[in-house]
Amino acid sequence: MTQDAYQHPALEDVTLPEVLHALSDPLRLSIVARLREGGERGWGEFDTHLAASTLSHHMKVLRMAGLIRTRREGARCQVALRPEIEGRFPGLLATVIGLT
Amino acid sequence: MTQDAYQHPALEDVTLPEVLHALSDPLRLSIVARLREGGERGWGEFDTHLAASTLSHHMKVLRMAGLIRTRREGARCQVALRPEIEGRFPGLLATVIGLT
DNA sequence: GCTGGTGTTCGATGTTCGTCGAATATAGGA
DNA sequence: TCCTATATTCGACGAACATCGAACACCAGC
Image (tube, rainbow over all chains, first blue to last red; front, side):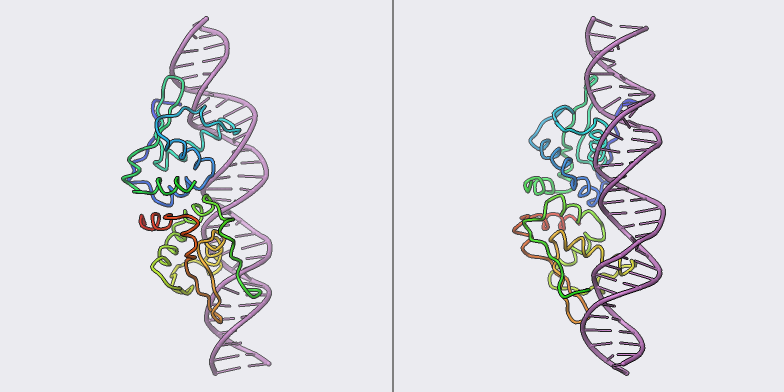
């Protein structure tokens, strides 16, 4: 990161089309599905052939859609689902991920 | 139409990201929400300030995502939800539209 | 301090998207 | 038959997107 922390939007500011768009990419959908299994994951666990900058871009899309929370852990990063998203869009993730 | 009938994809060929993308546009989401109230609707009922060609484009996106069925009625067109989409993606529309 | 690993940011590039106007096809009525 | 209404298709346009490599910032060891 350039500065200290990550930008996480308030969930009230997140719109349903925005979330659906974030989930409409196969890679991002698979990332969310993996995170829904629980716990935190490191960047490296999402084994993709993409460039690091591309993965960083997708993580930002998910973060700006209110779906994930990113946390620094020394030099590494850890991501996890934002559980509050269930309160903002009840049942959405369960339904969508269940259809994966 | 140029020829006789409309192209409607087989639901097995429709992917989840494709459906999510179709629903990620506010106008298309509102169209699906209206159609979910039941019955058929004519083009004119979707009162939008957009050009006719733009509405036609969005209808095609929804149709190709397996969400709606278009039927000719003389010079007019009637659209309705494809009820089989419930079998392909159980609970998806109910959840997403319920969050609108 | 320097060095290596990790992730972000910044152009750049090619693709897709949303929108429009114009041209076209088709149906129905005067 | 001609005219109007309706909807699709066809370029065209700018905006947004997915991807990359290069440069940068940060942290941890040596």
